[in-house]
Amino acid sequence: MAEEAEEKASGDTVSIVKAESEIAPPKVPDVELIVDGFGFMPEDSVNQFKSRSKMTAAELKKSSKSVKENKSTSSSQSPCASSTNIDIVRRYTWKTKNRMTVQIITFGATITTIQVPDKKGVPDDVIAGFDTLEEYFQPRNPYFGATIGRYANYIRDGTIVVKPSGRMYMLSNNRGHNHYNGGYIGFDKVNWRSYVNGNKVVMSHISERFHEGYPGTVMAQITFEVTCNNTLKIEMRCTTSEPTIVNLSSSPYFNLAGHHAGPEQMYDHIISINADKYTVVDDDGLVTGEKNVVGGTAYDFRVPRVLRAMLPRIPMGGYDVNYCITQGTEQDLSFQARALHPLTGRVVEVYSNQPGLQFYTGNLLPDPDKIVEGKKSYGYIPLMGKQGAHYKKHGLFCLMPQNYPDAVNHKNFPNSILNPGEVYVHKIQYKFGLLLGKYV
View 1 (spheres, one colour):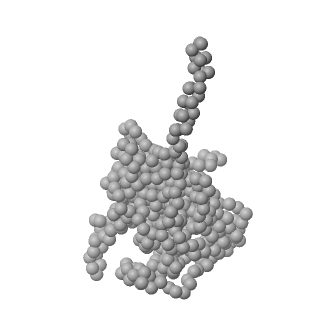
View 2 (tube, helix red, strand yellow):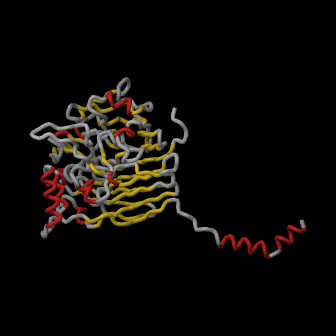
View 3 (cartoon, helix red, strand yellow):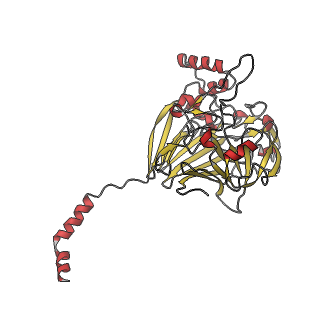
């Protein structure tokens, strides 16, 4: 006891403690946020998107050259896309202590990178995208990682009736005779304003009245956050000046084996979807208003199913269907879907407060086995992505939380009308993890 008292009384112990505290390493943050630039918006971006959507492939090549050689000297800003007057496209990068990296750019509020480790600790990028901003402008971009709005998915004949006024509005017909994913210049084709709030990035955009035919001026705000447990949180909010329809979504295209892995690895994914019913579509892919029970059909993912066994059972060449999510009473976020890739052990779970989930297996991506017969026979035109990747049919899948397609035109579908004084709120969480053992 006397020896202990002497040690406590001596100054040596105190000096040693001070030395340890002085050389203690600085604490590494759980999540680090970095801001840089990704490119510049062209001056005539509004006119480019409108004209490019109606061009052939040959015309697109000529137009892209002429745009680079001759930039329009006259101001071509349109009131239909108020945020396109922002020149710089910013990029935000989150890095977590668990070796996850997420990158989001302000053009289209687009998720460009989600890099997560596999069960061996090797990180890989698991969503599709492009290396340059100009590639995101191309008309062949299938909305990779973008924010979709004002209304995600189809609206039949581009016609809506907004109650209680009962007024009819004609929206732009950018997909045949129908309106799709917000029209020619949806939320995916504008450069959003942005600022940093702690570890969150807040982006905003004003969609003017009658833009793409929609009634009301809509103020949209999206908050992105990445947490240390490898979760990407997205919260979308909208207000309006007059009754209108709103249905925002996010469209990252996944392949948990790596965005470059292709169809063979995509077929190995095991999918679960928390839904008892799905919305029936006609031959044109438009909802009919009916809801079918998934039991006993190839649409049943209530228990985990391997895509390799399920895809041949679908007559349309793959899944492109809206599921009616099973939600609890007074539940904020509901579990919607889970995807697992057994070889790498990567898992992603999707949570949302929306009633629907669009499950899409990349059916319209370029098909190497398809040769089109016409005046001239030609093979497929590859879609080049990040780091030289070739994106092919069934090489990627998409899980998009949303309201039901064309909900405004079907009384038995959830409400999609937003009135002045109300706030539209859509929350999404993509949770990434690992399955370290064998999947049974």
